[in-house]
Length: 325
Image 1 (cartoon, rainbow, N blue to C red):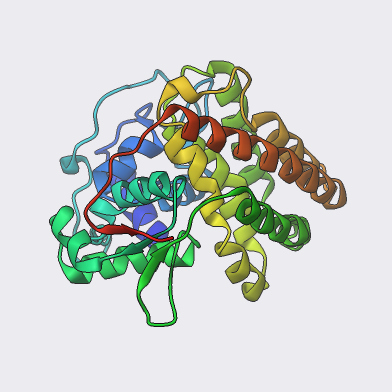
Image 2: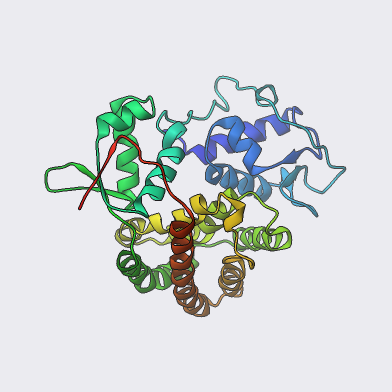
């Protein structure tokens, strides 16, 4: 039976620790490990949590984990593939990132920016040429984006990019306000205390350094609550409906890439922190209430953020989009 990616990563890192390739005190960080293995941060995060639970790594007064049961002198160095030798019959190399993922973020960003200014028909052949990818890859990217609600097919199965306006934002946020508090309560019983403590620590760290942080961290922090935590809800039908609203999270990921758009006050950290603290205290009811309040505030902030972006930017036309009336 094929193992999940986080389980593969757990075995690879655990093997390197047990065989002494990773010395006690070696610093392990999500981002560098994800880059090294060619995967997203989510499976790396899960693998590190499992390694911590197993006593192979530990937390310390800093970001990330250290190899060993207890903190020791920190060894900061760039990890290489040679630190994770794979042997037959034990840990195997994790599945490589699919080809479409190498261009996904760029296409996602470009389409989000264009959608702020109008509705378009997407020429998939021209899109493939523009990004120098195959039709197979372009189809995979657009299919992925359709699951998030950024693009959709019309009645003739042609890809469409619909404009982000206040009416559309309002409809999507209404769906989120109706569903996410309930989904959070269903997910609460499956959350581990250690997992919540990790989310809380990440938020405290972000609050202490803001705005001196990589804007891509916004995406990770949003995912902690709205993707990872809610994803523990056992009702898969509700999660599929919510997946169509995930395009709302892209404004933080792609508009905040330019630090000139960073708000004076941190955008959502305290609101997320309140929710996680309620969950940590076993008060899923209060967490759900705080979630609804958070989404009301988030809708207002996202509308302001997108309006500001439209006012201060002119996006160059791309050959694969045809403006619709």
